[in-house]
Image (cartoon, rainbow, N blue to C red; front, side):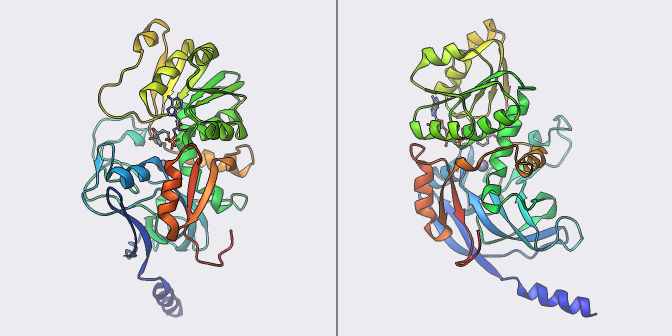
Length: 363
Ligand SMILES: NC(=O)c1ccc[n+]([C@@H]2O[C@H](COP(=O)([O-])OP(=O)(O)OC[C@H]3O[C@@H](n4cnc5c(N)ncnc54)[C@H](O)[C@@H]3O)[C@@H](O)[C@H]2O)c1
Ligand SMILES: [Zn+2]
């Protein structure tokens, strides 16, 4: 009985609401007190510490839509977060209260639609935190407190601080993209677009043993960061002859536009592999695809990730993966608009973090 009384006391300690960042439509971002959903038995409550701003968050803010995902109702943004469990799931699954965690934001779709069983990232109807792809939308985790299924939580070893841990989700995207290329050991690699995803891809390629890594971007700042995480050489995107001369075994396209994909195809060696992780707009894209035929290039798509998040955590914990330079700015939640404006400008920023800590919190 004493235990029950303690549990009741603990239940009462959780706040009923907390501040969250909510997109209401294009140009309409609000910090609001949102109710904390009561956790179901399989759900835990997390106190969020850091959240990385992703391109999709920027799109909801700027356009009220990210690609085909159009806001039909207010949406709590955010899927790149770290924090601490404040209430473990009542069914005993997942980490205990007090555990530092990162979050896997995906919930595979239901039903028996066709997709490879070992690739749930491809399941139709898959939902993702902070996404308007379905209606009702899937609220995200830019919120001081968030209720999440315990299966999404990944405990962090002490050696990974919560700030770096905010990069675990986009690094998993990069890890998945690199693994789509197969074994890169001893191979030459070219990364087109050196924003957060491109820079994290450089870091993952370095760790995976790529022999020589060349990074491409339009601007000096992203190239500086790519160098800091392991690029051996950088090329300005306008220098197309230099890109073609790389003749890379493996090319990762992470700019998300057709000029970048054209560079990727041009920079690949005959018989090489091009992994497309940058999200092109839907519809027709003008790219020199005939080269992919005559050079027998392997063109591969790459979408989100599955269990790669566990490999990322292990590689950060053992010190073999270096990604800290990708974080360029940090703002408190109260300054979210400024944070989004900074994140929008890839000439000056790479990954911008929101901090959800209360004044006086450590790290
Ligand atoms: N496939 C997935 O699962 C997945 C997941 C997350 C992000 N993404 C996509 O990956 C891409 C990169 O994400 P990000 O957060 O780094 O975006 P970002 O916009 O911050 O970075 C893109 C970078 O590419 C550079 N660039 C633009 N045109 C270029 C060109 N022609 N040649 C070389 N560089 C060029 C820009 O200067 C910028 O630095 C986006 O398209 C994003 O939507 C895909
Ligand atoms: Zn993201």
